Length: 501
Image (cartoon, rainbow, N blue to C red; front, side):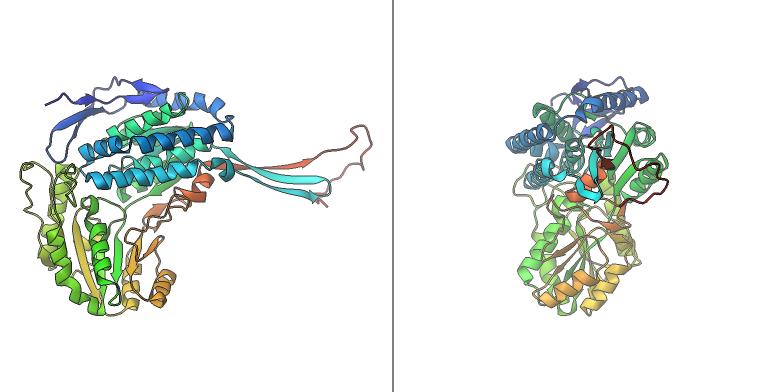
């Protein structure tokens, strides 16, 4: 067994070994082997990272759009070339299957590709002769030092939702990745510097809630992006906004997938189960609630049979459909929620609690689990399970399904499977959820559209990606300008009015 890697911070363009006395083990979820150790940054290390970013901003903000674009072009090339390596690091520390991890790298790559278009995205507007001889124009300028705090479930994609657009817009950045699976994030940051990101523009510090609070409070950080749980995200949003920062906080969810009886059955069931059980359900966009409309309830036996046939195994097994949960605490929590579902009267059609994978008996495995006859008062419905548990609700009509979903406080994403254009259009119009999929199970839009979760799933007006990312990471400066032809000529005298004609 190899010695665990000592993970450093990354400050000023190079690894920065920590002097912290607090370290945490990073384990392989399939084996419980300790593969790395990560430090919890000291206050001095946080201060150093922010001060380094603040100093780098003085020159980076004036770097041309073309130069920033070329760095992003190089970064996307390097990510493509290192996809396998990044995916293996994700699988080793997170547990998701290698194909799923490769897909994650691809979704992160989309954002970097979008950042390559910064020369056409970071454009202002001008009105020539807005008043006689007066031009008015606005500039989209960087804010300063930005910060990002990411969750464990997408250690490459979530950082890509943050720093590429932030630094492409001329900001510098301090990233705090999850302490549970930091190695793939660190490799991504190394690739960014290989692509030409100057020292100090992109920095990484590790830690827990105390480090997050230091970032929220630091006066030199002007904007903060968070993706994670609702409990933590609400705290981050309140604390950072009270400190005067611009904040976007993308949080928890309870996503529903409506299945109409006119849907193509095989496509609908396969996509539903892929969404519910992929990454062992550890996605904020997982469709963990199936809403079967009318006769679609008759498909329950096939849904259960398909779920039972899914293969559970270590993420390194390419034949596996789902891997382990990230740590023993996550497994214990999921098992507790399954117990509560049974106790509160839901019908347990498939029980994944006794899942054991041969050769990986210590792994954090939970098999696909399916509940029927679930009500909106049960814990398995009101809480985000973040595990491979699908809860099934049956309703009579599409109107009933829409009303049921709209009563849920969350609004991250929802999907409908149907063969009817009328039903799809009614659903997208009437549903009060920020991201809608029509015959698409996980409606995360491509990166040149913004991530638009809503209601209790989001705090802040602007989400990651797309046009909103440019708006979030820039401030608008408006200039009103008049130039006189002859500086020596007399004027029309003192004008005390505010009118401009």
